[in-house]
Length: 404
Image (cartoon, rainbow, N blue to C red):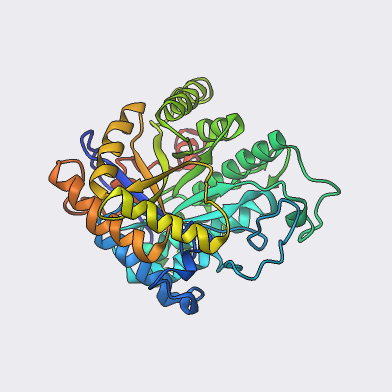
């Protein structure tokens, strides 16, 4: 069945925050798997992930992200750390999202993909498939890797790229993926048994993408996704990341240690966006926070300290770590959005404790303040974030060409 563009997309409310959670094994803290209720024996099962996403959907969150990587988790920068007291191993993020998709109805599903060692053609059809399976709720969070021990898994290059080149390659990757999503027009599928015509070949287009890092002929082998183009996001914690967000994404995740740093990061991204893509849709920028939630700040801090003792070190993250109550977190989020943030992606310190604290504590608190939805108002991730469904760039060219 071909998918036609939606007639309209509800605007994103200026008074409502958007909320997402980052799902990462048992939680962001390295000792999270030892928390009561963590279910470490179920971490590599479909049921574990389905339960976590169902909890997030029950809290009316906009989307979840699935963390991923191309090497075992490690505390060492140059390879496996050989530790046996921390979670090691992951399920594939895209496949996990696809498995969970039929069990959910509204929440967006955004797997992480490392562009450094993957081909745009493969990623484009995997995420397009996820968008079809979820009926328009897929996204993609791109990330890069310059780690030599990940490089050795693939052997494609004699030496790792520089940081600037990694992000340049990621931008090429995103451009090729988006063109592949556009390579089928919305009505390319005919499926007319009487005439024997399944597809209109004139509505499938070569993309002929040629960049420094990729050459992709196309077209895709997967029909155009229900959203047209699933949303693309990236994390920014420095200038290279900010430029990638500005140039190539719909969603930016801003890692910052305090309010001043968040303001500076948003300003830098918006300046770069204005220079690189002045006519593009407005970005949806999400602040990043790692959260440990309890009935009050001392209880949350004590729980984190207990986990730190189990891990043998004080936990810190690349973004601000919050310990406190849902009400205090609501205060912070509502104040912090003045930096120009559309919402926040929260990283539960422990999934077993802090994800329900978000959905059953923070969300009701924000609802009481009129700052968060009370029901899902759209069926697609684009709709939830107030973004229009784009037309295929190739359909527009075909319509205006002399032969059309």
